[in-house]
Length: 342
Image (tube, rainbow, N blue to C red; front, side):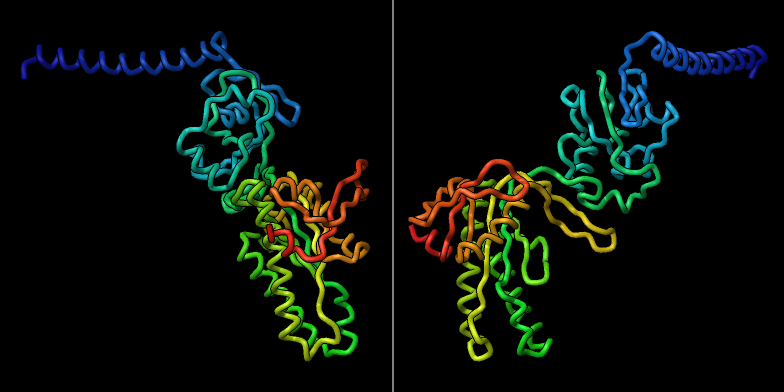
């Protein structure tokens, strides 16, 4: 290679090096100019801070740029949900989730107002609240409902075994356990047969939920079918235990439909999937009323109407439920199976 050729190569190499650094400098300058004179959005953080960030900057980047701690295990690649936030004002103006974010949110059954901070790049002002502590790990974040539940219209059904304390008066403890296990097994089978969910167990009763996978009208019909199936199975259980029982076992059922928060709750070592809400409390109160009305089931008028079921001459009562100001119309049902004979 001649001296002239070597000189041209050296010049080209020098030009490439200068060109590279000019491009890097231009990118940095553009970023700096965007933060100073480009479009920005205001982020109102639940801590009280108001953060100004350039459009194109993710929520996670904006929060951390402001010096606020925020959980993020996967490095902002939508491979975990530790950075998720609840969005208040500005939710409608956010760009829709991308494929990766949508998959991650679906995995934890996140409600529509929850987004991943690492993937969300607002175009307008927005208000957010982190849902997990800054030190949260990925295992905690992957639990469905770990940080929040979701609103859903469900039917709550409380079932109680009447006079259960009498079982132990003339029986050995193991004999009582045997009868109780038989009872709960039959109730569980009744729920399985009618698409009910066994949400909670208590000493002599249980809470069942209908509507976790169906719309409310169908859920109401399934709940009433579940009550009828429970009564049928109780009759069969009484027949099989007739020699061991001084009097037949009886149940009380309370049912009411409405909006509840459904999700995973309880201690981390033993979480349960259950529900809380006004309609859950009302169903519990209605179950207690079966004693006063000496019937098997007390169900709200709203639940029967939503199911499209005629109470078939059952007595209507206008009751005051503890914790509510307005009265509630309910029906006292002697045999839930009669509701379905139409």
